[in-house]
Length: 225
Ligand code: SAH
Image 1 (cartoon, helix red, strand yellow):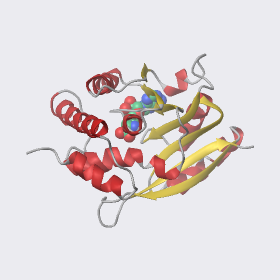
Image 2 (image 1 turned 30 degrees about the horizontal axis):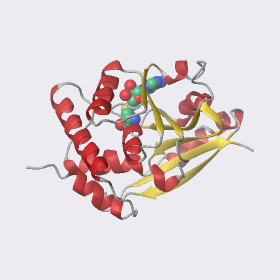
Image 3 (image 1 turned 180 degrees about the vertical axis):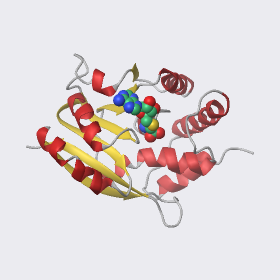
Image 4 (image 1 turned 120 degrees about the vertical axis):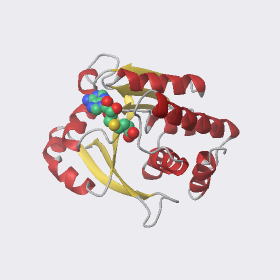
């Protein structure tokens, strides 16, 4: 049976007025196939392996950031703790103009990402094996990115000190959070103040994500003016 992943993704994206090109459709299809294949034979990458699980829970969930903030043309984006490439690789497939860096502490997961990049012919992706807190102050990395992302990696108290050093002065850090976003942000208020970050929460509801629908709470942080 052919995979329904891409048709489901396209139906959901249509609700946001986004249409995929044939190249993007193929890239998402190949990515989904690789995820299922590696997950079954090589490496535990995800619990979500159904067509809708991948389409909505991984691809659409990653792309939901485009509803929460604008990402400028040719922006440099770093995805911290990317795991199997989320949210960095789906964003890069949707926005090939971006320059993407994936940071991941587990080498095997990064090998999966490299396979996706090669087989889906995704260009301008840099993969870095290491821990965000060690890499963030390295020359050539510190202060280099327009946007940093993190989904399901750590609480904000930890993420903020890891992510902020990656950013340019006007850069923005985006964390994917669920219902506990406000509470988590409260716990991180002191850290945010120390780093001169002003943070706000932007909810985005995912189409075709079930009943009741799923809502992502994005925490967006930027340097105070
Ligand atoms: N962002 C992916 C993976 C989430 S699981 C997704 O949403 O599906 C968390 C991942 O972050 C794991 O792969 C783990 O190896 C990685 N990770 C955790 N702490 C890290 C750190 N300090 N630096 C780099 N990677 C980290």
